[in-house]
Length: 326
Image 1 (tube, one colour):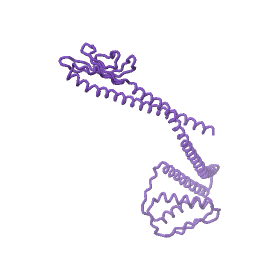
Image 2 (tube, rainbow, N blue to C red; image 1 turned 90 degrees about the horizontal axis):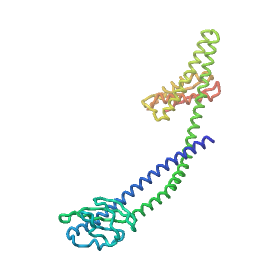
Image 3 (cartoon, rainbow, N blue to C red; image 1 turned 135 degrees about the horizontal axis):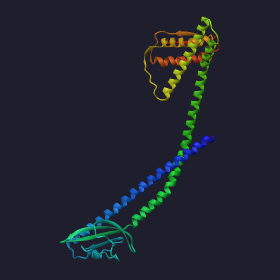
Image 4 (cartoon, helix red, strand yellow; image 1 turned 180 degrees about the horizontal axis):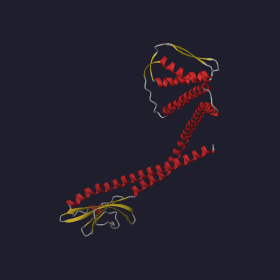
């Protein structure tokens, strides 16, 4: 019982560790994917907002429309080739700390916090100006923080639920395994018991023959006994082999047309030596020409099992009847 509890505990700990690692990887992967998506959406939105403003600047560079813009959490600047600020939105108190090169960057703006910037070059006559479109990352960071808190709260709950389900199913699984192991032990015990008797008889006969010289009649009797026990051993081994093949799913049956009375006659003949040891007579009442489609080897083995059991559990000097009727 202690060993079983130890195995269950180790399985439970190993499963929880594995499941926890997998869940953590899944949550981390989902978080990184979500972060990438929302940041790409922010970058795409910066470009969409900048496009119409740049178009107006190209058409009329003298207009100061950018100076009039006052959109919450959105910031704009127009720079010339030297980096001097030509225009900036009304809500900007200081110049944006931007590098004079195209692309995206994230900066900290005093008083405003973290800002995502997009620098876009465009032509105004012979000059190349830079348009800077910026947006606060406050909403993005808030969404990511919410997701992190949600994941940190959900991860233990998911692991607990998974562990409970595993605990319930593992008990059933281990019970089935224990049942199978018990059946296997019983099978080995039964097989050992079945093999012990013929082996003991063989050992006794050989020891008897080796103790001193015997007459030809005694040798013949001992040989017949050993032959009978060897046939019994062969049947037991064949049965064990058939069971092992069936358990492995590799049992192949080759059905063919046959006369069932012939298979029964062969089985009775094979069981006759065992019956004679107990002075049991096998009576046959077999109809003829009973045609069947089946595997003769497996049918013969099946009939032998029935006959062995009948002989084994019948009192000495009795009769065992075998009847086949259409």
